Image (cartoon, rainbow, N blue to C red; front, side, top):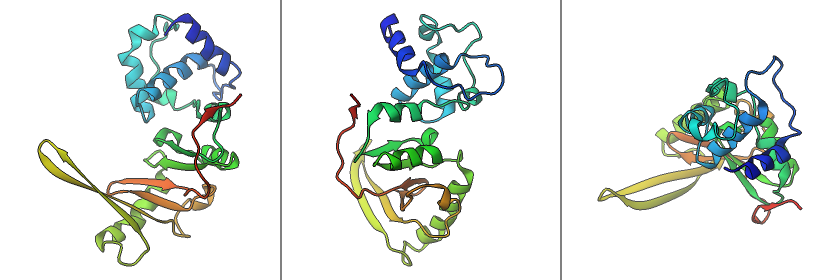
Amino acid sequence: MNQTAAAAIREHFGELTDPRRREPTYPLLEMVTMALCAVICGADDFVAIAKYARTKKEWFSSFLDLSNGIPSHDRFNEITAIPKLLELIEISGALVTIDAMGCQTAIAETIVDAGADYCLAVKRNQPTLHDGIEAFLSPHLDNDFAETNVRRHVSHDTTHGRDVQRFSFLLPVPQDLPDRHRWKGLKAMAGRPGWPRTLRPLDRPRRSQQPRR
């Protein structure tokens, strides 16, 4: 990343409000820069972001002030750039998919209010929702969804010379799912065993995300 790119990040995120109440050890823009790079490279939670930042410390130090070192994952958990990113792109009519670090009620509401749909990965950063989904799915997985409506998909591929089947499913969210009321527009859950996701199904045509002019 050259100085021009670093300046562009400052231009786009320079007006971010720092949500941290105490005097920060790590400047907000530096954390946002590291988080953005990590997510672009596949990091899907704050532990992975911190690990990526440590791995790329020498590179980051070429254009960031790392006099205080690399933040730990709990420090990254204090900030997020996703709401700002959603403001910068036109998402109306799109399906926005975000990994577990973006599984936040405020983000879901922002997406719905912008006329889009969301598919958010659920992990233990949302323990009530995660445990509620697991508790709901467990008996249905045991009886092969005999007592509920479900849509299934089976894919086949070859891995290391073996034929592999992968099962996925889509089913409505029950009215009594814990935490459901906090997730605007939540309609369904999808996934495969051990991999729950929440999904607000599409009710309009998708279109590609484009930068807002």
